[in-house]
Length: 237
Image 1 (tube, helix red, strand yellow):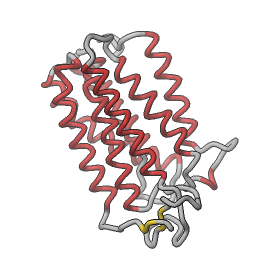
Image 2 (cartoon, helix red, strand yellow):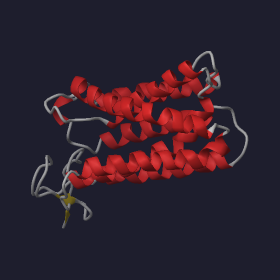
Image 3 (cartoon, helix red, strand yellow):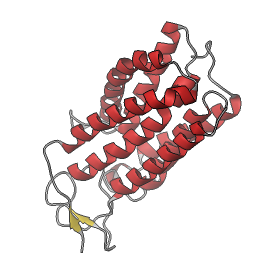
């Protein structure tokens, strides 16, 4: 028997707000270990929030559409990265270690936000007969059908990634940007895999893959190439 997901007013928005706060708090704590300036954490944060929200909305409208309120975590991630690039160029500072400082918190924010997705019934999984299936009575998910709690799968994996990134920062000296590229590749690989258990994009597949999986694959490749290239420098930021 599945478990009926509780429905609360706008749980996704609450989880996104909570995740953003957790990411900022974590970045402040990780900054010394990452070799980043705490003042830059404060400085880039408003930019990341604004462009993250804009990127989340814009990517959803372009890739999915149909809901003017719809947003995408992947789009938010790209918008946030744009904020770091603009901040680094404007301030003339390297952003490698600043990105490293935010990496564990960003993965934590992903994990928290997916719990909100679970409560809201969005980003739902495929039908399953497994004993831990979830049955929704409200929201966009099919009602009365036992589904994979794909949102919680992704949340657990993102939380594990956040812990791994924290341990990597605590381990000692490293090249600037290494932890961020591990985050980018890791969170994208997680999204690629979990998407196979999701059913919200079933009518928009190309070659058996969702649009989010193509983007995830591209980001994994970028992360691997950039990790081999070395840290982001002042000139490239």
